[in-house]
Image (cartoon, rainbow, N blue to C red):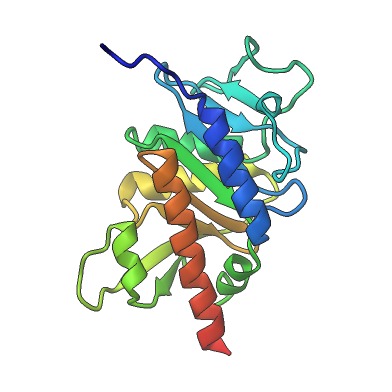
Length: 207
């Protein structure tokens, strides 16, 4: 007998957001999480919602072209300010199912460790969890300028990644936060934790 049970992906986003909130990575209403569903659209956290108190009604269903699917989405909600970044990630990486963006103190600090478009990461064991299986790897995370108009950030991400794919499924926006993506919500959650661990190590080492 086939198991036809369905788990609403928003429940997984709620659980991840609550966890990140407790870590201090999504304070107030900062940050945004999304998850793609089989028809190509995706659920994303609405703007202005506390990430420590999310409910099913605090999400908006978006089409790849930017249209809001009003069926199932509350009419009074607005999409997250970073929606264009999520759209770009899903367009660039067809196998990406989830995209998470958090604002941590460490992410903002390490973004100031370089003036270039890439930040070198220490050759820690944790990189294996991000798909880097090399001995003493030379791994970098792409760094982008934090523009007031978020679609400009998304356009720069698309331009750079269309030419060169990143070494790890993550990018850093200077003085803003980190964005990761994965083939599942579990992967995206793990990647967020791994990247933030590496950032904490870098900040501690800098001291």
